[in-house]
Image (cartoon, rainbow, N blue to C red):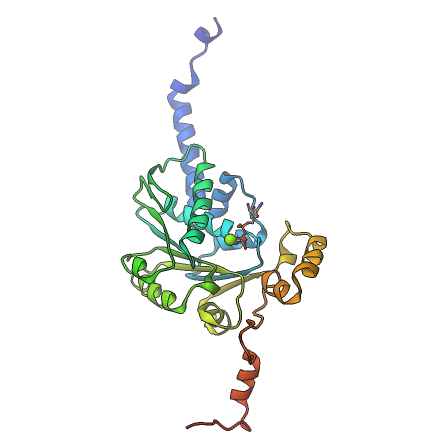
Length: 272
Ligand SMILES: Nc1ncnc2c1ncn2[C@@H]1O[C@H](COP(=O)(O)OP(=O)(O)OP(=O)(O)O)[C@@H](O)[C@H]1O
Ligand SMILES: [Mg+2]
């Protein structure tokens, strides 16, 4: 019979070694390029997403339109860190536990789409994954008290960053100082205030800034956008889709007016 004449390839030591070598090379390539992980998950990243996945900057700020794909790309960053850095601690933070969980769900979906992954998920819940290489990904509520317990953070991701409080941001930053870890902020704008706006406009060249409007997203058509502008009005459209820090409705004086007044030598301070 056919199978008696041919040796079974699964027991051929040379073939087994060749397959192992190939897998090791692929893994090494993926370790130094998170785009390879995205492809293994079945996602073909947009050019800007590929740039973010390949970035080695310690501080990255993503100012993106709604639905641009910012949560998708950062969930891949989180997964890459966990699978390729044994013992890594990745924290996912946002204004609320529900939003952190949503991002975490994307991480879980990406992990679930992998076949033949050698790093196993040892413990898995709605809030955390603990992997066989001792790496952890933890989704956190936007509350200072819960966060202070963590140290040695390798990657801190803050989703909807423009809606996270300044107090929380001040509380998490020291964690990175000791570990030398990375921080990635992602958000749509929410007025000219808060730490995200400050880092974006005045944070200096220590930040890699990436701005992606809806026009730059290949999955959002210009016809749909025009209809949306009619539907939601100009103010929301500029904020949600064009990534503009438009004045929040409760800011009586515009930020630019105040800056101009402060810079104007003709304007004398009322006090002092
Ligand atoms: N490179 C890509 N290829 C195909 N689909 C993508 C890609 N990136 C993101 N998507 C899809 O686009 C949709 C929006 O992605 P995602 O949720 O990451 O966007 P977001 O910017 O976080 O949106 P939101 O502002 O609503 O939080 C999702 O259905 C996601 O699967
Ligand atoms: Mg999102």
